[in-house]
Amino acid sequence: MAGHSKSSNGKPGGGKTIATNRKARFDYHITDTLEAGIVLTGTEIKSLRDGRANIADAYARPQNGELWLHNAHIAPYPQGGIYNHEPTRPRKLLVHKEQLAYLTSEAGEKGLTIVPLRMYLKGHYAKVEVGLAKGKRQYDKRRTLIDREKDQEARRAVRQASR
Image (cartoon, rainbow, N blue to C red; front, side, top):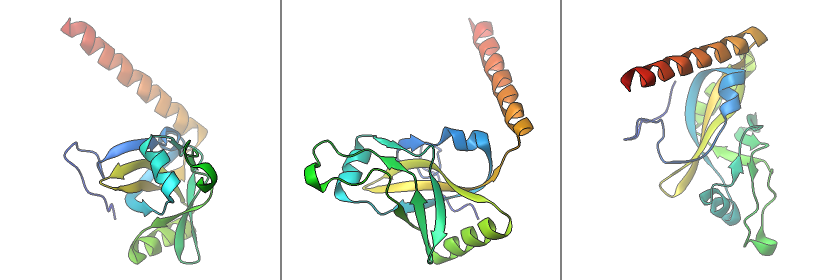
């Protein structure tokens, strides 16, 4: 149920990336992804447009028939004054009923986690790419590091050969 669209730059969802969760792809096997809207206040969207967000420790959880994003840090807007927001408050994610039912059943039955992979702006809207994730074992993480080093060495060798 990979419910995402490709933009002209080839990335799912497109738009200007604000924050990525690089740790998620290292710590988890991502089985499926989908795009979700996010409900924000005025100072939160202004802070996002400045690129001041962190989703490294964030996770999503279904509650009362809705999907909520927890531990996502959006820095207070400098000119916000008394209207500023709490940086790590839970934020509602906007998904279709069918998508929510799918995420809830997969997370409940198979013991998967719902993690945000990327936060980005698409037009005037802030979006979050969430993924169904299964935790990696320690040896899987080592394999990821080894594969990454081999890829770097291969790219380096190709660069050296082209000179």
